[in-house]
Amino acid sequence: MALWVLSLVAASIGVAFWIYQRFGHLLKYGAKIPGYPALPVIGNALEYVNKTPHEFLESVGENFAAHGKTFRVWMGPDLMVVSKDARVAEAVLSSQKFLDKSNEYDFLRPWLANGLLTSTGRKWHSRRKIITPTFHFKILEQFVEIFDRQSSVFVEKLRPHAVSEEAFDIYPLVTLCALDVICESAMGTKVNAQEDAESEYVRAVKDMSYIVHQRTFKILARMNFTFNLMPYRGVQEQALKVLHGYTDSVIKSRRRELGATSGWKIDENDNDIGIRKKVAFLDMLLATTVDGKPLEDLEIREEVDTFMFEGHDTTTSAISFLFRCLAENPKVQAKVYEEILTVIGNDVSRPVTLQVLNDLNYLDLVIKETLRLYPSVPAYARNLKEDMIVGKDITIPAGCNLVVVPFYMGRDADYFERPNEFWPERFATETSAEKANPYRYVPFSAGPRNCVGQKFAVAEIKSLVSKTLRHYEVLPVGAARAAKTGRFVAELILRDEGGVPVRLRKRM
View 1 (cartoon, rainbow, N blue to C red):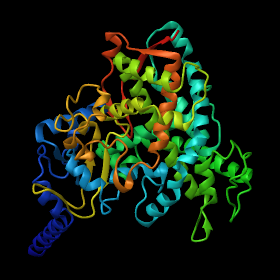
View 2: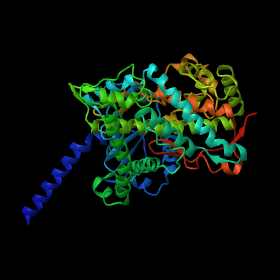
View 3: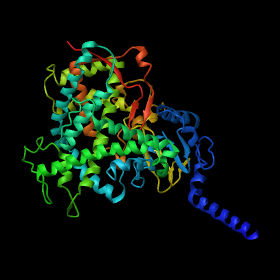
View 4: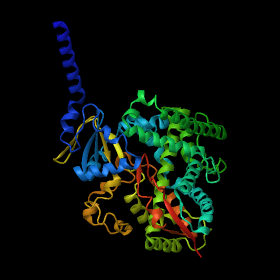
């Protein structure tokens, strides 16, 4: 009996020592960070069990109101530190030490594997070096024709809504247009999503985004063992079958079309490959060698899937919210339209160039202001491998997941005057004090892991919005319809649970 008691005591001591070794550092510093009381083992997880998707983001705002610019949440044994402090954003985003994405990005790996978004270390540096030249301005110039052509299709799809002048959700139509743009720009294929509204690929993207969000906040879905027993697993497998199947088929087809072999190079004088050598992203990956060897199809797929994900849903979110802002702020819309007439003229069929888009300076300000209030990526997360000390009052411990929230940082009165007002001119009249901390505004992230495709995104936004405004005036919806919006969902990408309803009127 005594031996049994001694064994139990020894086992208890061993477990306690393991817990201290594994979590002692997190517990020590986590206790110093403000946050609601947590239960043993499960932490604060019960608070999120029954929340609807839009309530997740609302709860973040409630925590900021209760605890200040930085708070902590225990998701089971995992410590999550959430911040809208620009100092914290600068410390983590500008550093070469904190490049590892948080554990939540592991939920993306079944889809994106170890592409640019999720990879770390040497592989990330290598891929970043390969991909960055793809977005050189000379290559972007070639994509503007695609932007313009797909924008023309978009304008035609809007025509019935302009005739009726009734409210409709513009988000799904923008989604299909963005998918057409990204497929043709990235892979040289045309999925004609705008002509086929029931796109299987779009549904698969939505399903994967939803699953990643559920795995982030639901404790049973976070663990692989229990996730595999849940209905989510079947939905994920079906979505991945669609997503990976499409990308694999395009890569194989493109290899055959270009006659890609080891040592094949892009012919700068060849204007007859697919869409006039515009497929810089996929073509450059096919032409790339690492240590003298070409990339394998699986390596190419993870980068193409990453580009498809990051370049499709993000621009959809930005463009849709921009239309909402224009509808709700007619004076701003009038200034944008006046600039469009000055720069492009009143010929609605005139194609634009990259230089023309660059000359739309006021539209630049409108895009910036839209992304301040509605950042396409509402939060960035890192897994800290060492302590991060910010000023004299904040120590964020190694081993935790740090989340920076641009959605709330952009709405903080400490960083922006009249933060709830849509005022594009603020970015043309910033004071030196406001400019002193640029990390208060990071819609494209910042530092080493900033968005490599942000110039591509801005050019696409300008092309679609300017084309639309040349044809239509964007109008607000009635109070009853508007009341159903404003429930924001922070999955991988920011969206409104009630959609983005607007009305259109044909310009005379």
